[in-house]
Length: 301
Image (cartoon, rainbow, N blue to C red; front, top):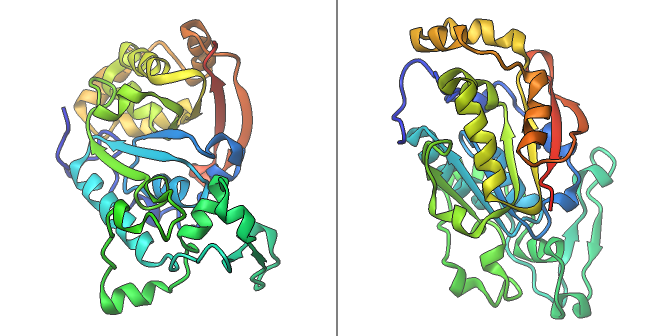
């Protein structure tokens, strides 16, 4: 069951969360191999206002990205963010003479490197990077354009298929969608096809405190159930020390915390017992209290 926003974000459903983590690109995604997302179906659990979801769909070449959050107001904001990101994206380039900007991290500061996409590449079966580049350069227009003239309408996928190399349904913004749901307790229609990647950034603590040890175990089993064999679960758990402050937010959280026996350091073994391989530690990202480890678990065949 989805929940409306409350003044106390007991599910971690902070509004304006990304104002506290201002960055054009989420540093946590930089820890993850780009190949993990390219051409894949991705589920982003606890998507908040959809910044990570849109970045995966626009910049990292995913075929389909679904963001799910328990807070309907945040999901509505996520749809608006998708349109805002689309409004700043450049127009689609024609296959014969497309000039594409390289990734930001490949160019020195202040320099905009470009490369040319050959006609043969564009006319054959382009890789997801080429498809996305044909769909338009991210951050092409300044945000001030949207502020002055309003967001651009999003055309339907069918009408843009020719200009997008016949793959517009798999390119941003059509490859990104959002759902309001308590995903730990119930399915969404997108689950039926399964996912190659499930992402859980900074949500394990909230699931743990709201549902107890059993609720967290149910979440991990749900992730295992919707992943395809060989699929990956990317988990950014919060440290146990942060639970103390959070449980003071609400009486229910305080009472639930008293019965918790599992600790974040137990999650790896718990996931292996469910059917994942050992954790691959990708490193940590963020600053101050937002600096947390990111782990990758592979569903065994």
